[in-house]
Image (cartoon, rainbow, N blue to C red):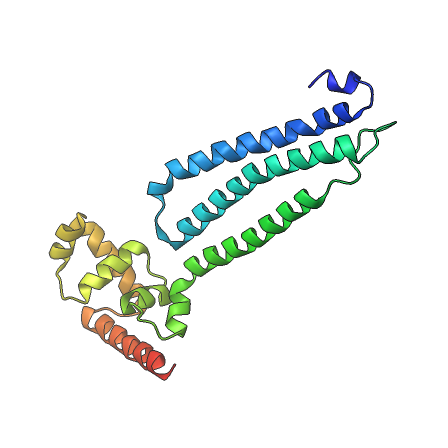
Length: 211
């Protein structure tokens, strides 16, 4: 590598000048592909699946096109271009152009899948698919994940002690979360919270039926 700039301009010098980048992409794509396969069992959910497929595909494209571009360089550099006074490739662009197009299309599709996974529940609601009323209610009132869990049990008339045992929380922690839930709903009793939820659920079901 260090000696290549010292060589006289020739087809061989040009080929050796561009070859390392293709070797790098081949090795990078191969190691990346192996890493994705090793981590495949840890991928859960639509978003992670979209990212995993995108990475896997991009690494595969790198492997394939690193070899294709190297082969095209071999043909063009030694049979088409002239390298008197320079080492630039003038006629080779087809493989790289195709690779860029493929990566661009894959990126668009991948990010569409990521956004679809992130906002899938909202899309499902608009299409009339079943929606968890508690999930929607918690999102509407900006409950934390823990508040949502506790609120779901409040709706089942479970006592603070029962909630504490089910979620492995201290009784004081359950009372604090319950107090925060009541503040967000602007109520002071469980019955009032349940009534607000019932109204929300009825409106949600009516919206789904009309779509």
